[in-house]
Length: 436
Figure 1 (cartoon, helix red, strand yellow):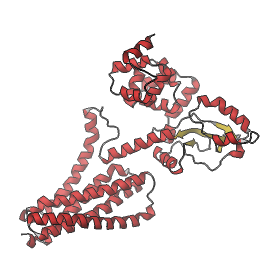
Figure 2 (cartoon, one colour):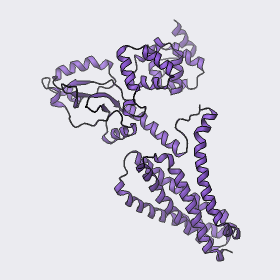
Figure 3 (cartoon, helix red, strand yellow):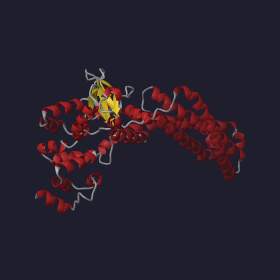
């Protein structure tokens, strides 16, 4: 009766709202309303909502329910989703929940928690179907029917030998159309892709994308099955990695959210601002070296930022493309020379066009042909520089095992600013008599 009243008070119509939509709505609810939702939903419905919630709301929901109810809710969820939630809880509550589980679940969950969050072992699920190769098709179908209600993924069946080592895979479609007297070994594809539990989740995502897989098995060194990673988990990985790259390109830590405290945001942002400040000093020192030239021609101080600004913009275009292609494994290091040559010509052509437009405008404003010529030449030079370093920096960082998204923008800005100012002011010094 209490659940009915809770639903009525919150105007929840479970026949009319999708769980993912309710999960999104919870982000805007007060704590007391979230608690009412927990009380108003049955265990299965709450498990569906819990799977779709953001981490902050998941922790609140688990905090509002008893250990017994949390275990009941977990009973409707896959092991990998349970592990993700437990990993976010404080140590005390996590131990309470694990200790309250059945022995088999406790052992399995504890093992999964031992893997890194961003590894294949950390994102795999243990709900799959593996059958012995000696089973006939009719026997296999009978087993599949028994196991399916408790299994997350059934489209691919994993086939093992008598020692429980995986020897290949079989599609459910092929099993259903095969002769009942054939064995599983007869329809097994022995050429299959797998990963080990320590494999980074980004590498797993690349393999799934490259080979167009719906699931990929996780095997130990003895080729024994540990779990599988399904395509829905890969989608989450891709979103997570893309978000992380975008944040890092902006010098922001992936852990920072809108809910981070003031001091957490300071701690995560300040170091990168300090690094950027140090690189800015290099550009300032370059300008200072040409102080006397700038003092004689004031127009230089007003126009030189155009060259460095355009260089930074062009370099960012190249960096974004290269980082994206590095992420999906499309950059072949033997092709770097050809790619660099292309960027040089791209900088030459784009620089000439942009430089010509800028040079005409500047020459018209300041009534000085040579100032326009300097802008034209400097623009070509700096766009070549930006393309060259925009390509080279991410590739070198990748080779050094440093995340290109984390540091590329800093080094690129330093290169385009320092070299851009140097090139522009050097040309200005050469043409100085024509500028005065």
